[in-house]
Length: 90
Image (cartoon, rainbow, N blue to C red; front, side, top):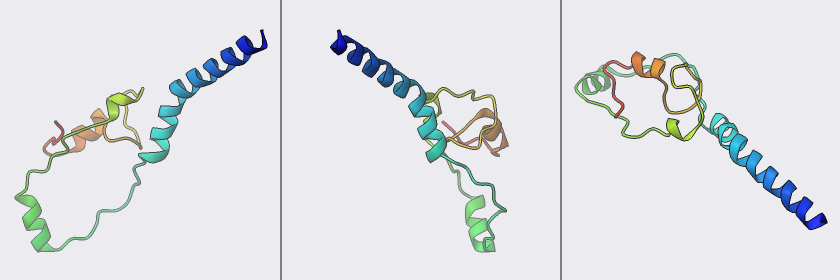
């Protein structure tokens, strides 16, 4: 009987960890810090203006997040995508 109770407690603990843990981990590791724009040279700006820059992956669907709400963590959400000119996520 004690073994069954210990096993049940362990299963509940693992379940809670698997449900709550990933979101807590994402929030702690994928932070976005607000800062003023970096100062760059005219040569760097000219080079950048001729580039097409794309992020070819996103981990956002791995987590239980509302992608319609702006977030300060994670790779992307729809509001941050719409800020990008032109959009560069595939």
